[in-house]
Each structure stands twice: as C-alpha cells, then as structure tokens.
Length: 338
Image (cartoon, rainbow, N blue to C red):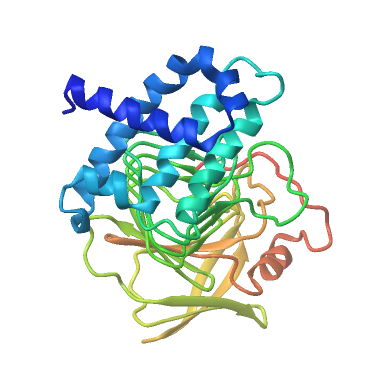
C-alpha cells in the first residue's frame, strides 16, 4: 500500500516526466486538464510498479530500482500518461493526438517498446525487458497481464489494414512469452500462458497453455500434466493422415475457422499404427448441417490436453469434395447444434 506522501512523491516524479517530454507550448495546452491526466495515471502507475516488484524476482521487490533503472517500465509509465491525454474530451487545438504520440514515443526511445496511446491496458500491467515489443492501436489488455520482449500484438496484414478492430484482445492474467506474435482481432481468454516464439492467429480459450510449431497449435489446462505428444496431419489421395509421437486422444473432429465443430463430415479410422493413423471422410446425415467457414482445422482432445492442427494441408479440398461444395462460392448457412 502506498502512503499519502509516497503518492505525492510519485505524482511529482510523473509530472516531471510529462513536462520534460513536451515543449513548453504543449504543456500549456494540457495545463488546465492536468488533474484529469495525472490522478488516474498516478494510481495506475503505482499499481504497475507494485506488480512489477512482486512478480519479477530480479528486481528484489525494489520499486525504486524499477522506477529509476528499468527502461521497460518507462514504456508503461509514458503510455499511462499518453493514454490519459488521448482520453481527454478536448481536442487541444488539434494537438491532443500529437501530444499523446510524443509521450509514447518518449517511452519507445527509452525502452525499445512501442505502445499506441489508444491501447486499452488494464491494471497491474508488467512489461518485462520490453525491447522490440509492439502493441497496436486497437489492442485491449486485461488486468494482471505480463508481457516479455519482442512481442507483437498486431494486425494480421502488413499494409492497407482495415479501419476498425484489427488487433488482439487479451483477457486477465495472460502471460506472453518473448518473441510471440499475436495477429489479428483474436481473443485470448483469461489465465492463458503463451510460450515463447508462438505465432497465434486463432482465438485461445481461457485456462490454456499454448505452444505452436508450424501448423500445430496445442492447448492444455494450466494445471495439467505432461502433454500427450506432438501431432501433424495432411490429406492426400482422398484420405486424411494423422502422424505423431503419441497418438493418444479421446475425440477427433473437424472444426471450422471459428473452432466450431463441422457437422457435415464424419471421420472413420481405417488404419492405425503407433505413430500413424489413416481416416476416411464421409458426408454425415445431420439436420441443419452448414457449409463450414473455411479454412478447416482438426481438433483432438484428451483429459489433460486439447490440440488443434491449424489448416492441415489438403483438408479443405478433401472436405469440399465430401460435402459437394467444390467450386461453389463459400457461404455460411444455419449452424448445426453441438
């Protein structure tokens, strides 16, 4: 807990950072709004600092060390100030966005991390190491999140991305490892752990641990045991092949681009060995079966782990043949009940 005098000291130090990052004329523009900017920023920065000191063992619990010497904390500090400027209801003679961007750019220069001032970040945010991290404009980050260096929370495209929601949404208590790329308007659930160097382009449900190698996306309960192995799949010659280290699962299904089960196809195993399974795809008789939302994925589950093989090569083409949709325009009809 922060005492009154400690908060006054933090207020003064944040105000120094704000003034030193701007021109005198820019400070004059925001002067009448200074309490609107500073009061919430001080509270949020105090909570960020406490969370950092508590969760990073290298800091030894020293908030003064983090505030004065940790470059990554400067990125968060300047973002908090910039975001309050961004939220002001006044345009500041057309200078509001410029001032907000100047503040976050100051944090980028100090830390190597870029956070757009419009990003919505929850309480007790920790950005550890930070260098090379980019957090895009329409990102939303929940409470108690921890992000390491080299992370991109970005759009799925490069140039000419659409206006509107195009960046990820992270739930509460999400941990993102170094080098992770989360791309597009995907939703990451609460209490998710994303291992280093993953590339995430699909929604991740809550309470999952995620690792991705090529097209294999694995998810297991955060308190689950050792994973059931590694998998890969592909379709060829009218058959679907599943290969892996340990083929141990209780259910296998085809799911669409939104991870909903495809009710129009059934999988029948016609050959099996220790590391190989061969399946035939048949058209299922189901009420309200829908033309699925492509690309398709393959979902495996067992008591401690769920695995989604993202868009296995050849699966879309095989499914279209089975469903009789080859060459027809893609359309989404009434979804079957699961």
